Structures are given as structure tokens and as C-alpha cells.
Image (cartoon, rainbow over all chains, first blue to last red; front, side, top):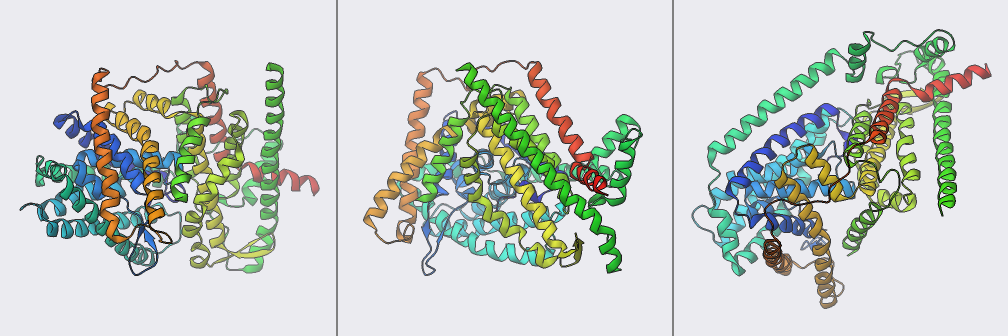
Length: 341
Length: 269
């Protein structure tokens, strides 16, 4: 369910990063206030545990295949929502850096999709009320399954929205939603069952671990509401401001250039540059991100043929140039190392 | 099992690579982080049909590979592991976007352009992250995060998670081996052992956390993680950031491949 950088737009990435920073700031404040210093190493080591646990292949009975866990619910149950959220955020950062699972710009999206919905929605609104009257094996079963399902469904829907708002793919809302929600129904069920198995085991062996977290200051509706309000404001503010820029200035960069230089496009000096930029303007392969479309096919073919040829040739040459520079740099580098040696 | 070994290998590989001493490794971590983020923003801000403007951006990872003396083969192999993911997401585009366009006399569906664009972007963005972590150690990166005023609790949590990942993966690996030796020809952990397998690992983990905390206390832990102090920003750092930023901005504004291409085709004419 990790969002990749390639699928999001800077606006969505930025807005989501702002939102998850707000939530993280809240959870850091909570953790600092309620700390129990012992929790710092516990958070780190349990974070590492969930990271390792994600690699366990759990055989799914009757299917011949195996499943993994995401661990968001498990973290919330073991550490409580605040510490659980922070642990998930650090796991996601390490995954983005070392494993290419989700990117740095999509980091905010991932923290939200995998950490927020489980720790701040599913845990306080589903798991806690269901285990309020006391923890029993039955309670753990229902609470784990329903909260895991809800957390994953929300996360999956969030992925759909983020991808579609970013507009980097052509997937249609209904197809994508249907696909994501149904596949995450199955994933959520497996996640819920595994979470239930682990939590039940821990509760039998060391009941105080689960009970301590569960008995912690109830999150209550006020605190959740506060976060939700803060989030909504954040989304509207950041999304609104950024998309206002984006719509009135098609390109943030072009806008910045216009602001700093006072002209809307950098003007090339006279001479060959003018000729070249004229050629470029007339023949741009993808002018302003869109193809020259025409109902007249022959026109399209004749108009674009030359351009795309120069685009392809140019692309090949640019690549060749990059490789060449790489080789030259490599030779220089080796020579320098030899001299030093 | 392959998954576990692979992750352990990944972490160790990048850990070792980040300790090298090359001009790139010696740069200030904050500069490398900011350059990476700027690069990512530039790539991600390209439209969904953009291909030609993306090509010059290959220059950045290419040069870092050479200057930081990184083993391209090993890193590209890591990249290939995750490739199916993005192909899975992107491959629907050619089916969904069937409008035809002509390129050099050939007609293809527009979806292929979208797919190719996503594919290139994906490779470039993931490579940029991998290059950051292979030239900057986790400790240095944490120091950079502290400079950016990321709260201490989060940075500490991040470092501890990172520190213990390899320890726990090793432990998991031993448990897995023991389990599979007792349960031959079984794919994954049987449902009867779901709870106890992961649960035992968790119990050991919590006990370990308690020992870690005691050890930290004995060594005078007061809530602050004292990372090795990092050097100050100097002129080469500023130059590095300015140089790359300038290049990214130029590559974004001017379509370099088209420029070169039209120059070339113009000469032929």
C-alpha cells in the first residue's frame, strides 16, 4: 500500500507531509508529556520488531498462499496510539530510504495511510470501545479484526484519493476504488487475524503489557476531534494555497521565475538561441505537458513526425552525453586515486 | 527466508557504503538531504506525459554513482527487486488511455507514454533515495534532521529502530530456520503458530528493550542521543547545492533533448 513518489504530485505530497507533521507534532507532545522514560527504548525496539515481523510469511489456511502484516494496529495496541504512530513513522522512513518502499516526497502520504488511520481512527474509535469492558479472548478477536479492516479500508481509500488527485495515471475513480477496497478487504481480514493471534498470545503470556497500554489515559473524543479539525484545516490551507498557485500559475517554477525576473519565460539572447527556441516552440514534443492533438490524422502525422524524430534523436544524444560524462569522470577519478596511491 | 536475508543484506550494504570516504560522502548531510528533496520535487512536478525533459535528470544519479564510487551493479540489482510493483501500477495505463498518437511515423497508444513516464520517474526517485542513504549514514542523516528542528523524541526513536532492525531480523532469521527445520515442506508459518511465533519474538524483544534501557541508564542516558558532531557547512557544500539546483532548474525549464535534437536535425537539413 506504499505510495511511490512517481505517482504523486508535489501539491499532494506537500499537503500530506504538512498533515502528517501536524499529527506527529501532536503525538510527540503526548509522548513527551506521558513519558514513562522506559518507553523510548521500548518504542525503538518494538518498531524494529514490527519491521522484522513484516517479513514473516504467515500461511493462509486453504489458499496455499501466504500473507504479511502491516503492523499499524499491532503498534497501536502495544504502544498506544501516540507512540505507535511515531514508531510507524520511523519504520516508514527507513523503508523509504533503504528499500525504496514509498518515497521521500510520498512519505507524508504513507505515514497518513498506514499510521494515522490505524493509530488515530481504528484504535481509539474501534479497538478501545470494544475492549472497554475488559479484555477477553473474544473481545480481542472482534476488536482486532474490525479495527484492522477499518484501518486498511481507510488507508486504501486514501491511496486512491491521493493517486487520483495527483493525476499521474489514467485510472478511473470507480475501477481503482473497487480494486483497492476489495483487495484490502482480504488483506485486512488476514491482518486482523494475525494481529488477533499475536495480541492473544501476548495477553495470555504477559497480560500487563496489553492492559497497561489499554488503561492509559483514554484518548477520548475531544482529543481525536481536535486532531481531525487540525488536519482538515491543514489540508484546506496547504492544498488550497498550493493549488491556487498551481492553477493561476501553471508551473510553480515558472511562477517563481516570473516573480524574480519579471518575465514569464526566460528570454534567450538573439541569434542561434532565438532560432533554436523558435524551432523548439514550434516543434515541442510535449508542449506544456500535452500532445498536439488533432482530429485530422494526416495533419497530426505530418506535424509531429519531424518533432518527435528530433525528440527521440535528442533524447538519445542526451543520454549518450550523460554516459560519456560518466565515463570521463570515472577515468579521472581512477587516475586521481592511482596518483594518490 | 529470501526476504529476510535480502533485507539484512540491504541494510548492511548501505551501512557499509555510507562509511566510504569520497568527496560526496564528505559533503554535509543536510546539503545532501536538501539536494535529494529538490531533485525529487523537480521530477515529481513533471506532467504525466513528460519523457524528454526527464532524460537530463539521469545525469545526477550517474555522476553521484561515479564520484561516490558506488557499486552500480549491486544497487541496480536492489532496484530490480522492487520493479514489479511499479510495473503493476503503471501497466494499466496503456489499456485505459487508448487514444493514438504518432511518434516518428509510428502510432502508439498514449497510455504507453504515461507508463514510460511513470516508469522513468519511479526509477529516478527511488535511485535518488538509495543514493542518499549510500552516501550518508543514518547517524549523519539524523543530525541533519535535528538541524531541521525535527523533535528529539522522533529522531531518537528513528535511530533506535534502525539500530535494532538488524538485531531483530537476525533473531527472526534464527527462529525461522528452527521452525522450518521442524516443519519441512511447509509454506510459511502454520496458523496454529501465528500467535506464538511472532509473540515469542515480541516477548524477547520487550525483554531486550528493558535490558537496553537499563544499560542506557547505567551509561548516563538523560534523553539525549549524542551523535558524533558533524562538520560545519563550508563553501563546497553551498557550491554543490547551488550547482545541482541550477542544473535541475535549467533541465526543467529548457527541454535539453529537444534542443539537442532540433540542433541536430537542423544541421542535417
